[in-house]
Image (cartoon, rainbow, N blue to C red; front, side):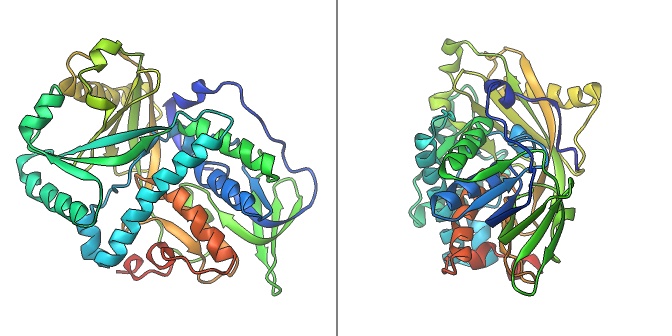
Length: 410
């Protein structure tokens, strides 16, 4: 099993008491077996079970214990790939359809968050997406025009408007409305609990070690403890562990990133942070910042082109110190130290779109893999795509994010 993060995580301390689930102790039959109990697996279990499909989740460790614990909880309809670039890549109609689905996914997450008995700290937010340099301003304006032309709720701020609302300025910024924040750890536990209340079976400490498909269309899974599971459909929601993919897929680019969370900030000082907007930038790799419900600041970035998280405190500390310098450069008055910091693996696909759909070579085997900065959004989108595919219905996004799309080969 890959080491997905190292350091001192923040989100698990916000929910120290939560439900635990048993390991598989006998043979099972189920309509849909979901492998992975993180964000993707939990959203799929919630949506599929609520819509009448019998599901079981198999998590080799603990629910929300993998990539979810290092997720920074930003929910944005804008993507790592700008809409104007996605238009060039797949055409305007498909690109706008994809971006619109991301915006819808934020609303869907908000609706589910309001239904959970466990408060996942979901809050609507706007985002400030600024030009990191004067050279980036023309491209940012092009992106603004593409978003505005296609009906997205955006505005453009010049440098003086940014300075009016923040203690820093940049050559320009897009303001996107319709984004949100969430506590990913609490959200996933809330989803798992709700799915279980609908009848889903959730299993922790259950490692699936083999998968065989029969001529009759059934799937036989075997756990490390030797128990047999028969399923009509199997969804791999395994995060960033591509060696477990069943078919011949284009593997993602795995990198590592860094994040930190401050101690609770003084409320008066946070007044300098206009509407607690998300902040991110055009530079790649990009810096991002958000606040939390208890007035902490989450900051991340400094991506590096290697997949292994930094284990050593001293080596990781050098990157975290850079994050602190960037935070205080934007907000000099926010001098409260970091209390949590970590390094984590993240994945990107070669065409900046998620892997969602049925394996072209293996009927009844599906993937819910939200590679990229919008993983939670992609997981929400995937749950409805896979629900349709399993029910033999057409979905307008299936060809855009499916595993046979031409942009994976080009």
